[in-house]
Length: 564
Ligand code: DON
Image (tube, rainbow, N blue to C red; front, side, top):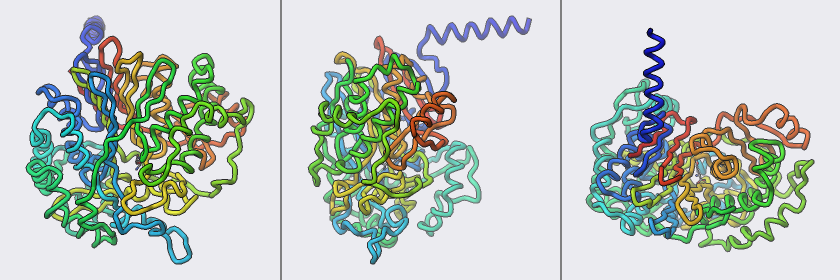
């Protein structure tokens, strides 16, 4: 009897899930008809969806979600960092917004080197000298001015409430706050906000100082952040912590609207981020390279497909190291890098039998720095099918760990994304050269790849992820999973991933990514391997038959899709 009852209940549940697309399968997966937000935290997704329900558009929701993440997801959500956005209007016009941090005016090429010309370990990652001039507040204001419909203060109101009244920390956040306690103490002797004997899931985190800062921004816009008391406090704290940022660096910070990188892939159009991110160019190169091969026929994670993808990635990351940087400072050869003839030539020495050996050009022995997924991504689609894809970061978890005294927000350590010295890797093992050398007011090269895909001229997919150097390949694989391997959005996001970035000379892979026989064949071809815990935390929305399918990544428990 009991069994029969359970059977009836479960059939009813399955039936209602199938027939009512608004019933969530899990917090990480949802179908809905009207609008959708996918972010790294349920409270932030709720803020975004509430704005949409109140008649805001995707940009309004994106701005509000970003401010909410600065409160509830302080490892990456931020006021003191920067990011990139791709915006696609309901009419199909696409635009990129660059609000990446800038090097302070006093920055110079050799600022992280000692007398002997060696990189001083940690200097570009910790403390005041790691801080780039933040872009987030100016960027969010600029995109709202251009596209937003709601009043600016309305977009900050939910974040202010969350900061003032506090919110219950998730298990993952409690774990992180405990893990970084030593750093918080080291750089912020006066600030107790994030310090506790031991954080537990459900503990309330209140941030009154941050609430006040958000209130100032709500009233005064970016002026309240880049000038006046907040700016002064930022400069004081950065300098007290060994940095070089000054008031004029802050006052002169400008976000930039840029032409996105647009690359065809089969009957899709991929719209992504131009320099100073390497994301759009590298993603475009990868897609165009694999388009020439029948990977659908070869199959998902088969030897041939995986070998081809890895070989393409090696070449693309080698190009990244040499040619990519802030195009306002260095002539990045975007068109040449995306030229199909060039890409064909780049693959001329590709062999189906053997891994191409890594040349000595960028040789160097190193291990990746042990940080994980500190950036964050938000994907939003509104009722008119305006879409925004946004990736934002402080770089490492809680950035430089430096909190601005009296104003309660973390400052980034984005300066580490510059190449401190040609060939010397940063925390993601990425190397660079002249194109990404440090210069005053230059933007450091990024891998962030907020992306929107069109199919036959219609909005098809909105996606992005954190993951440092692995961002590009995570976005690449997610697109292939849907387009070539017929997965739905949820399956495409959860599928195991791998990554090769030329140097270090190995394939990073998630457990159970390859079958034993594929792994053996790849080894036989000369590939090296390193198993890692996870790669990327993709947040994506797929639009099919006018239904939205949102997927958060099970790799982050707190990822959350909201829709209606
Ligand atoms: O801009 C970049 O490429 C990096 N600062 C992103 C950092 C990141 O994704 C950290 N998470 N792993």
